[in-house]
Length: 165
Image 1 (spheres, rainbow, N blue to C red):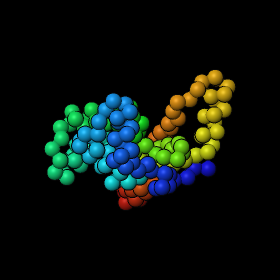
Image 2: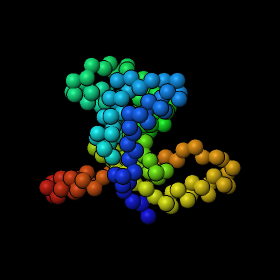
Image 3: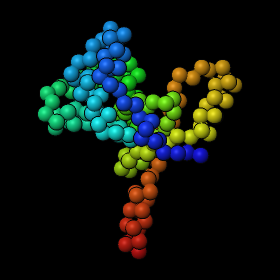
Image 4: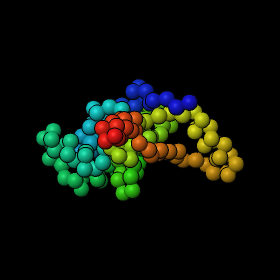
């Protein structure tokens, strides 16, 4: 059975933890990196942003940061396993705050409006473990993106069709 991802599963990182993680990797917590990560924490669960979205949000908040710096920060934060990266559509990379608690989650993406729903499924987790055993693969990541038409878009289509008849 699939369940929505609980808000409590979204990881919150303190400045001290971020400094420690980055220092261990020979990096430092720059104001830009901190602002990028804080943006995801402040938006909360279920927010998936492109690099352009991040840049736009930061500029709207009065931060002077270049798009190139945003890309570099996102790349580093993904490498440090503080953010997750996914490809919602061909060529469209989105980022989200990595979830704590070891719960693997998946995404359903509407092909019309790009609405994204997150879900947790023990069935998918169990199937991944079974496939790993059979094939001998050591899984480092399990990510499933289901594409379809969301309820709201289906209802709009039905409403539009009924007005035409």
